[in-house]
Length: 306
Picture 1 (cartoon, rainbow, N blue to C red):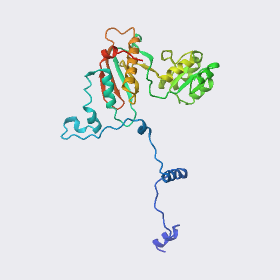
Picture 2: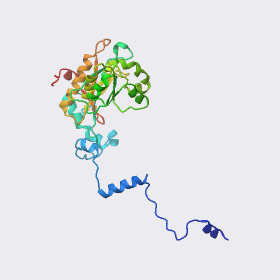
Picture 3: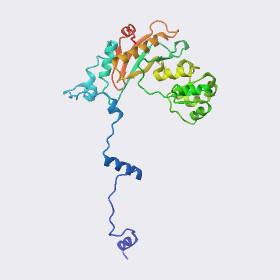
Picture 4: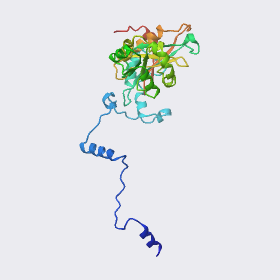
């Protein structure tokens, strides 16, 4: 028997068998049925970015004969380049916010960010800045609050709108990896038990702290404040405060109220060890947009309207 005959005899598939063409990979039968049902019903989905993002700007016509770094710039960068007066030019607060909103052309609802450089050296204890501020127009985020308490405070916390409330059971859940919350509030009597959660909470900045207002005997008031827009801020190692003060979907007036509230809070909580000039610079920007230098004197003289 020759080689060809041996191969034909050993092959389990007869010559008359027709092999179906390969299909695209499907994870499971349920996945295939789901895809087939969607294709049959012609369901269309609208993403969150499409519903909440501002209208797209007019189509930009690419300039010709670009020179220098502009030859490698994106169309979006070139389209907003003429709006920005430059990083070193001070702009009135409301004008800076209006220009920031014009340059927020990304395909999602960007954050409005504040970056304040202060004359502080955080390595000294009397030059550290860490506190909270309530934003009048809110943050634009849905905040999930967990409360560590016991006794009657558990029912009070749930009535006040807490997403999670408990004592030993909640501590065990957090120790097991449950981190589905943004703020953790604890009553003073629970702090000795919270100490063992340092490894889980510390790196995420969720450890309750009296300076941040997250160690509080009035549980209901604390929950209400954080739900309404209370945020914590602190200086980094270079003495700069980074903080989001709203969304680009906010109106310019609402963003100005939040910006003014943060500026007042930084001035009121000036550390005792800071001598001489306190503010060095104040910039605002959107998440994906250029920065604008705010005229600090005009902002400090601005009256905060309710």
